[in-house]
Amino acid sequence: MKQYRLPILVGTILILSILLVACMQSPESRLPVGGSQPIFTVSPMDIDSILRIVLLGNLNPPGHVFPTDHIYFYISNPDGDNRPDIVTLYSPGDLIVAAIEASEHVTAGFFDYSITLRSCEDITVVLGHVSSLSTEIFGGTSAFDKWTLMNEYSTGGETYRSWTKACIIQVRAGETLGTTGGNPDQYALDLGVYDRRHTHDKVANSSRWLETRYLHAVCPLSLYEEGPVLVR
Image (cartoon, rainbow, N blue to C red; front, side, top):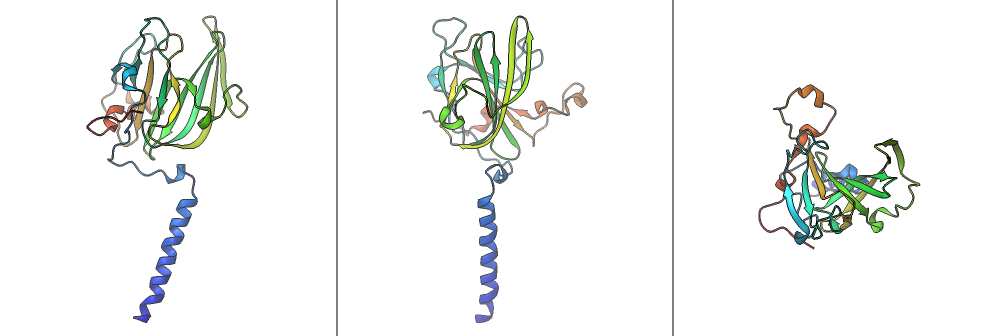
């Protein structure tokens, strides 16, 4: 039996070394390849705050003249004005924040944020029309010292600035990401999911869509398992 101890010991050390290297990698580099397990377990907002859900393919000119690649969670608006309620935004699953973006409406005086998250190498999740970001997770947004100014332009009497910031932040299902709602004429939270394993093949002029994730859009609701959805 002694003759087997050295190979076993060497094999054990090799396995432990591989695990140690894996644990030292960044969260982004340890993203798993997409599987079949449910990705989402928590509603992105309190159920009572959801007025209705509009599914993929919605047409809403002039903003959307093509079928949308995301769904809408319309926010409760008891006053019926152009500003829906401000509600807490939760992470729908255990995800990694890859980037955040800010659209500064300079003339109107408000910010519109989006959050890009990953669950694995194949699946990207985008939350749009976020009205504020959690300072505990993302830090302050009163200044954009560590952000990159991507664009500044004026149109229709309004001036806009677009900012972006790359990051690697692990968030848990149900963790508060910020808020949605409260901005003028932004009635819904956008939720888009893009799975590189899935490609729509019945599109007009498919060669025009090579540099976009549009062809990989899937219904976010399909990432929940059947049954009750957890809420905070």
